[in-house]
Image 1: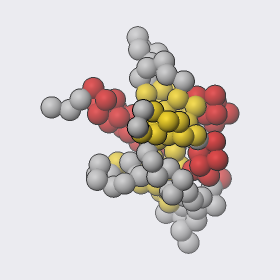
Image 2: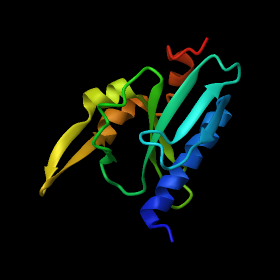
Image 3: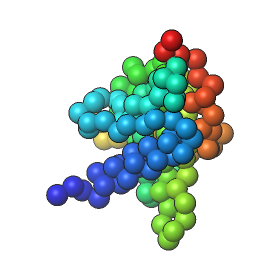
Image 4: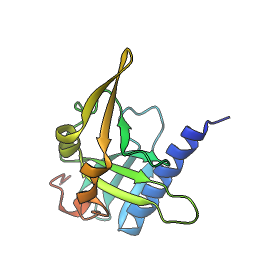
Length: 142
């Protein structure tokens, strides 16, 4: 049985795929075994292609957790979509952030014997509903 966290993550992926489709992109969620990528998408003419990593939170936390290799997956065609799911019928919030900005703005914080990698809501705010990032990217396939 999936955990609440897994269900939240899955919900975020499908919400983002639906939004991408609504913005004229062909979006396909992929296997959970693909490291660093949750959705592959392209424009209708197959001229631009993107890998999308979705990070979802359903709490009032002021950050999203990242994987330890967030600095490794950086390119013009790799985009993060941070999702904040609200309760009580309030629409989810989407923050579309280029991986280059995530690599620059995210920070690492000691957590016991481990390290947590975080991207803050404050750093995400300028990217709220910036779906045009997919149209303006230099990630061309022709």
